[in-house]
Image (cartoon, rainbow, N blue to C red; front, side):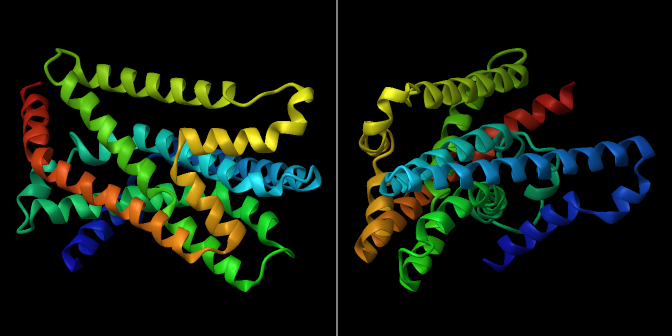
Length: 280
């Protein structure tokens, strides 16, 4: 685990290296600053939107339907982020030859990269979940509920992360035999993202007449679309620790299965991608 943490620190340092920033041109620094400002602004807008949505649910008397909806939003955000980032983190990354030459196991490399993707998704999940959970828990639940909410927040991104990486890996394998495989991978990933967002938007009724049954509909839809949402809701509404343990087990087990699958194909996929990139 110490080697995995060391590799993770290397990834973070390479991303935030101040030497690279100093050597960058003024235009590149301005572009990076603009990107940070836009990302921070979007995060703020999303957090405020989630908070006001939670307040609306509370005012409408549908507060118990809020947890599964928040989790669904978290799942969508995590899947989108994973589709967009998993290819560059797991498949065909630039420093593959340097990483595999280090005296570390493949499983250690996979763990370090899973950790980096998990923390990135945890950041986005926090933007979605924290404002809504604060509104849900404030004044209605004891301190135990806040502890449960924090634990669920830590485990919420794991299962959608595993699903996103697995699907991204399948897309990468299918596109490896094509001439413009990297372009096909990007296009297919974007199609998955668009279909996911469209499906999420059109699955929720928008008519005012549906407001009276919206709470029950959202709960049932969440349970059918994402079964772990039932344990998520039960854990928060009833402070049920058995539901917390089941939700945590499902989340961790999915990542363990993903790690086994990646361990069997990580080297083969990246060797093919790296050999193709060196021939160009």
